Length: 268
Image (cartoon, rainbow, N blue to C red):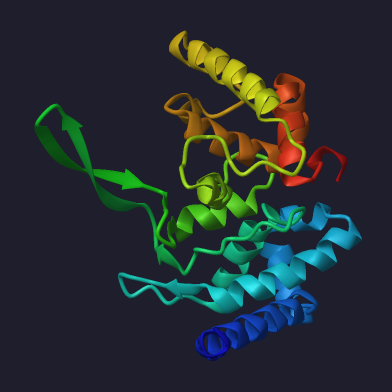
């Protein structure tokens, strides 16, 4: 038994060493402050950051540092991905995890197209499978990849009050997927009630669908009526960009998002 235990610890020790090193590196990065020129780029290109209280603004720097160390940015179609582009996307993505210890552990790459891009999708009706090209502004994949249109990522960040932000939208899907399924029920905060979440979001979703079907103007983008996961994602866009409007129109949804993100943007 002693020899077996010794061999076991010898076998796992390299893995443990790597884990310890990774943990120490992460803690070091979380404690970093961005360079003044990096902060200037973020505040220029992602103006929502200017609203943050000082303590949250300092915390954002560390999370951005971890994100930039972890994620590879790729530009197809000969797009030259600049450090400014990386900072903009990283800052927006990290706003969603600013209040909690959750992280995009599975995310490995962000692919950036110059503008809207075509994505091939499959639809199955019984035994019949059809493929079609769909024009998209962003995509979120479970296996560690996000795809974004830079044109729309840039414009979404620049206007922090229109309730439309493709980076928030796609990274909301990443958070949704942390449970193992993208279904509009993300990994809730400690102590947050699933029953209360379900009651708030199902009621609001059904009302949103009815309003869209009747042609009524809604506080959320009509795209949120297509599925529960899309309703969650467009709610996140509004939560960060137009929190007062969301709280006024859908107070139960807003209250659940405050608990989920451990943030209250209406107070910023």
